[in-house]
Image 1 (cartoon, rainbow, N blue to C red):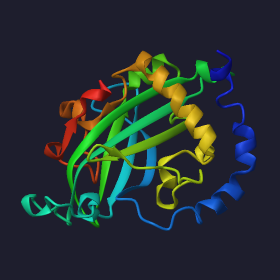
Image 2 (cartoon, helix red, strand yellow; image 1 turned 135 degrees about the horizontal axis):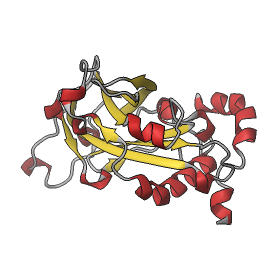
Image 3 (tube, rainbow, N blue to C red; image 1 turned 45 degrees about the vertical axis):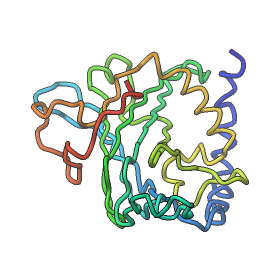
Length: 238
């Protein structure tokens, strides 16, 4: 698969050119995204009495505005319920993790894990964290590192995916934390996303959002985690 093997061939060059790309980020898009990814953190987590540490991923979000409230009114506006400007509904968070196994040289040999969760509603100007877990037995079986080599987060609001790049191909300024620094180049991101879309099926269901992790195995609930009623399973992540 020549195309697959070339997906990450330019990563070293991208790393060397990271500083100029970061400078471009500041000039990318002056507008705000409806919901932004403030940060992505990875840490090992011992759950209950399980021997092998899980990989816990925290995706921290912030809601800026309800995009439906900014839609221009139409002829039937009077008959419709006005959008609530203080709340953003149906925020789908999709996390893709990419691990490079020892000795792997081709992107086709990397390991891809993906999961999604949907926040039913989130108040504007507030933060919320969504947690994902990769089971410790999977980490040990697949000989994974304590955190992925690469990752990216995709956000949908009301069924519409929020752009990570401008029309000019530059990273959207307030969404740069949603992608690993190696993917600040749009072509590298597009190639990685395309390959991940085809490869994640092999590991479907292994990366789990918090609501699919039994609470009985938690030592304690992570700080800042949303209550279960605000998170629901997304069928497309199965």
